[in-house]
Amino acid sequence: MQPPLSRLVLYTKRMDAMAMFYETHFGYRTVRRADVRIVELVPPGSGIHLMLHPAGKGTREGQVGIKLVFDVSDVAAFCAQARERGLEFGPIHAADGYAFSNAKDPSKNTISVSSRAFAGR
Image (cartoon, rainbow, N blue to C red; front, top):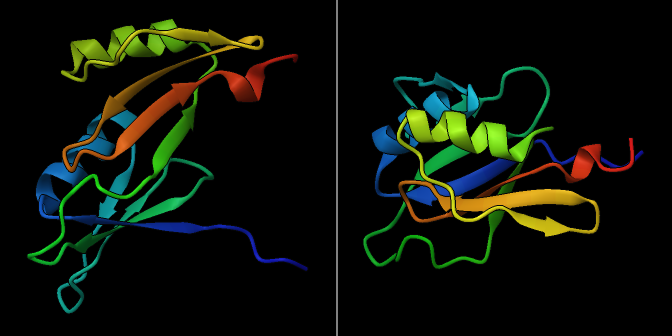
């Protein structure tokens, strides 16, 4: 049996802003332990846990080639709701029967909402 991907570490200089961002826009719950400097963000339902790790002084945020993709059935509706909460996504792109749109989190990581998981269903 191969182990599934279950956690993703994001290095950041903005721990509180990142936690609030993923809580507000994607429903994550923040778990902080007094003796640990990593903050764990637990998704609603199933999904990958995000682990926020303090970035070193020499680390430039957003420099790593990573994109976090969140599955949504209606990209336009999600983007409209996100806009009401203060998150502005870019243009909605159509690709092979699905749509997607991109934005950035507080540490400049690219995030995307995509209907690809629902294409052809």
